[in-house]
Every structure is written in structure tokens, then in C-alpha cells.
Image (cartoon, rainbow, N blue to C red; front, top):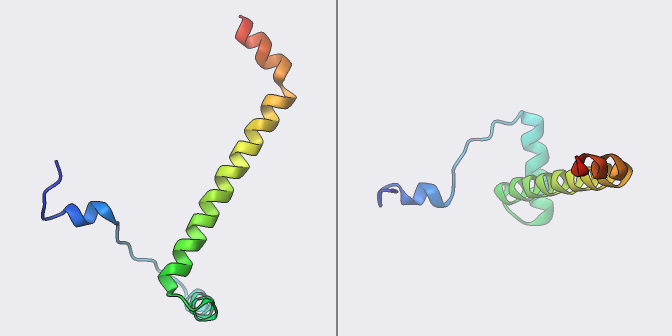
Length: 78
């Protein structure tokens, strides 16, 4: 059970992101260009990265099923 005193923590997780000076400059520049916060740029980057990974995994699975359909069919029949 979540205590009312710590419920906020379970709604949104806080974290510290350690960046090099160059990464910070790049993040700040992107945020200024887009007119958003550095946090918004970082969140967008994380969402795009995870979305691409899921899409890539799904494509790889589709390819495996397509290329190995005969083997998969025989395995299912055993």
C-alpha cells in the first residue's frame, strides 16, 4: 500500500541525469531552439528512443516469423 506521504513519488519519478559539459550545451541549445525546457527535450528523446526500439523489435519478430514460417509451423505441429 502506498502511503499518502509518498504517493507523489509513485506518480512521477525524479532522477538525476549526469551529462558532460558538451552534452549539457547540446541539450540547452536544442531546448532553446525548440522553445522548451531541457527536461522536455530529454523526455522527448527518451520517448523517441524507446519507441524506435519497440518498432525495431516488432520488425525483427515479423521478419523471423516470415522467414522461418515453415520451421515454426513444424515446431507447432510437434
